[in-house]
Image (cartoon, rainbow, N blue to C red):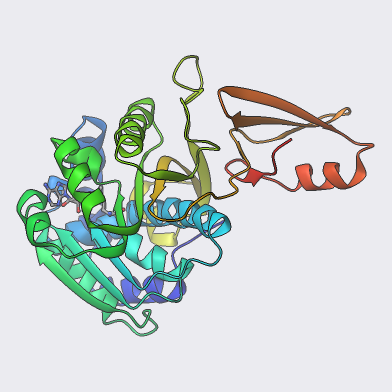
Length: 323
Ligand SMILES: C[S@@+](CC[C@H](N)C(=O)[O-])C[C@H]1O[C@@H](n2cnc3c(N)ncnc32)[C@H](O)[C@@H]1O
C-alpha cells in the first residue's frame, strides 16, 4: 500500500494542530458533493479547504501518481530527469510523487490557479524532510500561464485536464513544452479512459512514442467492448481521513487511467500490460493482457515452474514479457 511519504504526513499533522475536525469534515463533505455532481476543485477556496483536499484526495492522487511513475521507471530505468513542469499542480502532489520516483530531480515548476492549494505546496516544500528540489510556481489560469512556461524534462498533469477545457489546445502546448516525457493521469472512469484515448491519438499524430501503459503504438484494443483501460492502487487511510469521511475500512482503492508519452527514446521494450488482477486457479495463473491489436488471455500452468512463479508475482498494471 502506497501512503503519503512520512514527511508530508508530518507537515500536514503540524498544519492540522489547531484546526477543527468538524470544520474540515464540513468542507470535505461539500467538496465530495461537488465532485459527485460533476463539479471541480474550484470549491477549494480557503486554507481549511486545501487541508481537507490534502487529507481526503491528495493521498489517492499521490498513490496513483507513484503507481504510474513506477511503471515509467520500469520501462525507462536509465532515464533521470532533472526538471518537472506540473500543471494543475494543486499542492504539488505529482511533483512530490515524481521526486520519490526520480531522486535525480532538481527543479519543479507548478502552475495552478488555486491560491490556497499553491500555498499548501509552498508549505510542503518548506517542510522538514522535503525533497531537495527548487520549487517555483505560477498562480494563474493554464491558458495564459502555459504561454510563458519553460520546457521541462517531464511535464505532468495529474487529475487536472479533466477540469480544463478545451483540453486539445492545452495538450498541444504541453507536448511542445515536453523535453522527454509527458505524463497524464486521469480518474479511472470510462470518461477518464476516453479522454486518455483522445490524448493518445493526438500525441501519436504528433510523433510521440507511448511509453506506458500501452504495449504498442497501434490501435487500442479496448476501444470496443466492455473493458476500459484503468488501473487500481490500494492505500491506507490516515486517522484524520477516517474521521473526516466517517469511514470504517482502514484503506481505500483509487482507480486511475494514465498515459506516458515520450520523445527521443527510440525503440523501447514494453512487454504486455496486465489489464486486471491475475486469477489463480488449479490450472495455473490466468492473465488478461494488452497486446498489439487485441486483448490477450494467457494461462501459465503450474508445471511451468519459473514462468508460473513470475506470473503469480505480477499485479494488475505490471508489464510482463511478450509471449
Ligand atoms: C483535482 S485537482 C488535482 C491537483 C493535483 N494535480 C493532484 O493530483 O492532486 C485539479 C487542479 O487543477 C487546477 N486547475 C483546473 N483548471 C485550471 C486552469 N484552467 N488553470 C490552472 N489550474 C487549473 C485546479 O485549481 C486544481 O488544483
